[in-house]
Amino acid sequence: MVTVATWNINSVRLRLDQVERFLAEQQPDVLCLQEIKVAEHLFPHAAFERMGYVHRAVHGQKGYHGVATVSKLPLTELSRHDWQDNGEARHVGVEVGGAGKGLLIENVYIPAGGDEPDREVNPKFGQKLDFLERMAHWADTVDRPSLIVGDFNVAPLEHDVWSHKALLKVVSHTPVEVEALERFRIAHGWVDLGREYVPADQKSFSWWSYRNKDWKASNRGRRLDHMWASPELAPQARGHRALTECRDWERPSDHIPLVTRFEL
Image (cartoon, rainbow, N blue to C red):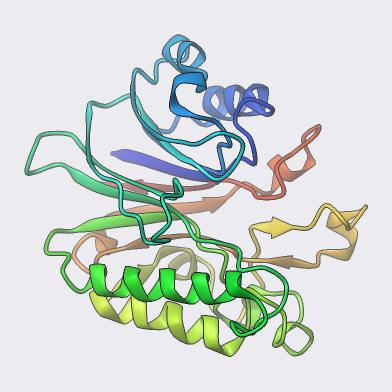
């Protein structure tokens, strides 16, 4: 059994105590972090060594973005795709286990896309759509069972947001973003593991804005974080959880971790 977790931590150094608590309590074999906001040489390597995550692939930059995959199991870094096409650190791909026969894990942080869902007035939104298009072209070439995880910054389904009607014109849930993500899904036939375990007609969220003082009472969330598996890998999943309790921790990330167990 191999357990993989993903979490947009919103600064790994600021929330290192929370990462340590999560790893101690949940003991995943592999943790994929997004928005680490630190360059590789300043990443808290010693802390992860101490916790037993002695294998790491870190693609970071100063102050912004960045992804890291840490593992108890041996891993080999395979790729750092620049789907943003501007040098930002938003992806790292690894193979966990034996070369050529291990588990491929793609860790991605898709751009948020700014506030206005119009590429003519908001270049960031256009960059997000182009990012998704480049991912779709890549997915069309994937020829091994893989797992792609991370902060997709898109809530694609009606019940992935607190109000489908209210958010149709809000970045992360607009039809054009949903269609772009769907093209990526179709390109490889990805299976959305979160919705394999929570039916699509039930609300399911992974992010709640800091602007909501009582996030739990208002529950105005969105499902921005995802774990998608190749069609061949998806049937090997044995359980998937969204750890909502982490949003209640002191100075939390606005995202929660997702955890999936695989019988490989």
